[in-house]
Picture (cartoon, rainbow, N blue to C red):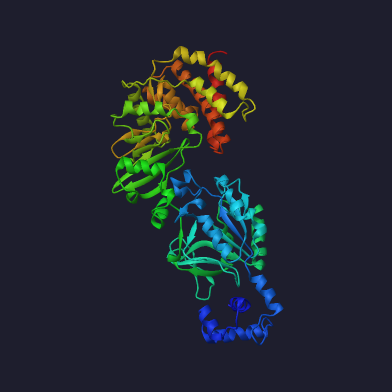
Length: 577
């Protein structure tokens, strides 16, 4: 409070009475008298309440000098909006969130603003010219939480605000004078916060079975506490596991919260973490006019207000999908992933779904665009994916594949395995990350005559026979996601299931016998091995292409290359080559 009175006295145009000070600052007259006495005793003001030179120095040290805005993350809960714009640039009342924060900082004299960007970083570039901000690029935004973002900005912690880019404040949360460091909490109590702010600002850790004050994400760090926080950030270099957490975890040391807590009313701010939260704050926001939402509106003939419980689903290898509810019904909206237009012929996919649309063992598709791949389908309730370690479930999956392969369904396109291998190779570039790629590819090429000589009559195959695409409900088994489907030798689907499940040879042999009801001959088994080698190379190239776009599939990508390498050897040994 001393600093606020000091600033008020410093900025006065005319003499201001003690009563006017009390009214302006919202404190009692007795409190004003006490504070003025302390200021005089400390030599910060004269007997006439004029600010001394020493007082001016204190004021300078209490003035926030800079801000760090954390804006690097995906904002995955913002589906489907985050496919088009980073959440810091979402508009509320025709104003981007981050611009509102910058303007509020400017109003209290804070002009040095550092913004840590990552996802869609280019979209923030215009802020450099418009507001003279500095952009700090976080290249690891997909790996780490915002701890790494703050580490990149640790040189700017002194007398600085730290804040997320996705909070909208009704009033200005920043001040010209800050007496001490603090972290901002809401007066709302929630189950997932272990902290309770006490009446005088201390923050107490509470038991897990109790509710704590909601953490807002905004903090102010004084120059003194900046040294401590900077040192804690430096220690992350030793314990890199902390990079996978939020920066607020540093504020707990020896089971104590190292900053004071400051309370804001829950009605005075809004954290925009989802489509629904943006809609509730500003129904007319331009960013609610989204292609995916428009499709849902028109197909289901509903208002966007009726769309509830939107949540992102597990990232697919090709697409990004989200779940939502309308009344008692549940749906999945698929949005094609980055680079998908290079990988998938959406017209061919559309033709497949038209062919199988009356089949009762695939998902019910309500909308599919053959130009861009947007797909709306009904969610299969009370269901689960195939458990690759459950023999009974795997056997049912093989029986369903047999049922597909013996059906009368036909389409006018085929899946050309070797052409696709070359196509993905061209997409990912001329040089593979695998040193012996040329040698392995040559072995896989040698398998082609053997495969083609022994290929069965082509039928409609799923091609993407991933165990995750086999969905068990209470009464039914479904096979979903037919993006890659086309006419091919049915044995390719067995091979695809095996390599997606990352089976070893013993499990592969068991899988083959499940499909063939224990009547598979040696030649057919070797041909399936050949498909495993060729399909492994196919998906290895696919993974390398995806990696060039910034997507990494971890152990899966190496496993596919191993299938190409090891099973090409097995089959060539069998053939005596």
